[in-house]
Image 1: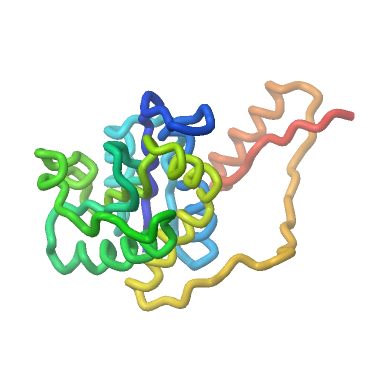
Image 2: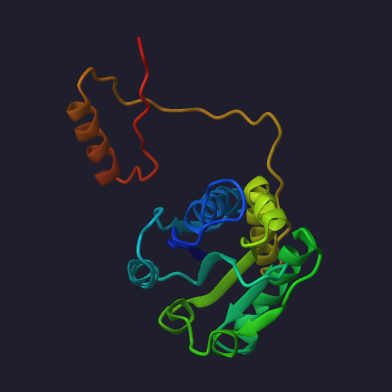
Length: 221
């Protein structure tokens, strides 16, 4: 199953705590989601931080995702999560209900706003529900305009991500695999360079060869 993760790019939505914003925290949630989804056997593509919603929709459709998950935090003076869908069709509710339940169980207040049709909440159908080919979930994970819940979000991005992944696993009838404690990670190095341009050239070669997780690590010697 292929999942596309689309974190909010709304950096203007400032949090009431922590000198941070919706784009920053939702990117952290999406990054954690990617890690937990992959551990549980899913194919995942995550939009980079700050990429436009239009580009995210284009990538999701090109990727031929089975499930598109938009990750946001809310405003308006409330508490608790909400999951929006295009319609209450069974195919949408299959994922929306367990994801919402997991987010609610994990939430600061233990309460929320349920699974709602996007147009009923926004007065229009959000593009990530309307224009994506995949089944789409628009997750409002918690409210960021309340200092207490904004602080909670910043301290619980990983548990929020795990809640989303647990909900999807439940929908698919899969047992959720917990992170391993003291797990060993083996890093493969393909070169060390004194010049940045040479390192970037080798990184480009690795990515073009199919090693999409390749990265540059800077070490002082």
